[in-house]
Length: 115
Image (tube, rainbow, N blue to C red):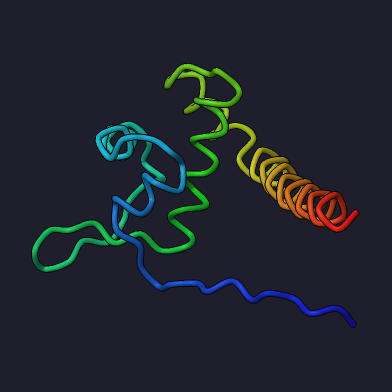
């Protein structure tokens, strides 16, 4: 059985870390929080946002609809209301395929450097 790297999963992520994951500005994430009722991160006593992995998955759905598929904010809201489960399943499939693709590209690069 091949060795598998375990992903280190944190319980909470800062808004800066989440913004870096999606390569967007933190202000865009704060804006999406005002527009999408699904996005409600926990806040610390100081008022800092603390995103759980579940919050990040919700953000991934919004990001996919708005940035990758080109929906307007209103259009994305309607899609999330009407086809929430189906949309999330598609996004999870796309995300897992992207991981497989990057893994295969890494293997290809390793083979090219050894040859």
